[in-house]
Length: 205
Length: 193
Image (cartoon, rainbow over all chains, first blue to last red; front, side):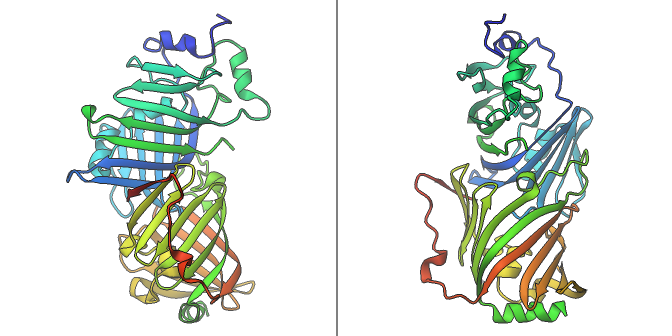
């Protein structure tokens, strides 16, 4: 399947592919998020984020530009914990429900693990998959989210991204795969509270 | 000592401008010890200008363009990459944050307890602990060198420590009236925070 553009082979069996969770992955950058609160008024939150995955555990820290932490969210298969400054940690089975209750908005943490690595999440079949000339994801609809990839970091000098593509279909999560630098996620109102998320991700150091 | 220098600074310095370097010195409770800096890789640089009370421009230019500007009434946060301005009433947006100390009204002792924190190679330090207990910051230490702002160390309640180092500070420069007037960059979305 040498002629198949990198990653295309993943689409066909995305549902069945048992995706190896990237052992550790970390992203940091800035987020802007618009949502409708209980009083139906539109609200926006802006800040810095630090995202770190270690095996199945994900830690997301939301911070203000001066570097102080607004919320720390931890999630793994056992459940989720959310800690606000000077408050006792709150626990729940699912991270999104916990965020919604504690912050008034919820990030699709389970999907983002894969979407941040520019690949569809396993489990539900993605639709509307479009790729750019280099085979990198440019659009994806999944789990009620419409996701646009607006920027990728240039492959590092050693051409990691290119090397990953050379030995067969790129494992998009493999280190050195194209690193997303700008993406927007929109959830249409139908499947829950309308929400739009803009992320700018610092290129890997 | 530090307290006296802080009081003098707050009383005498009505306007100022200068440069800053912001470093994420210690990040508390990291899942795997990796420091995830608030700014790319933990170091950001920029410049600022302020006029007490409540008017300031705090402009990060490296590693990316981010602008916080207050005109006394509204706080604007512009992010160039996201092409968006978030607008919110200044009011308590500053709270017990470093901005409140540098640019807010000068009743610092209303929201902070002050304690002299000694002197080290020419820098006299004062420790500020917020009186309210629901603030994000656990402690702020400001350093003065010959009466001029030198450093500010911010420890938040999660143990993250951010260090601000100041340089090229001009005290009480004359500022023209629209220094703090904010006009959104062309094409940027403006949203309510």
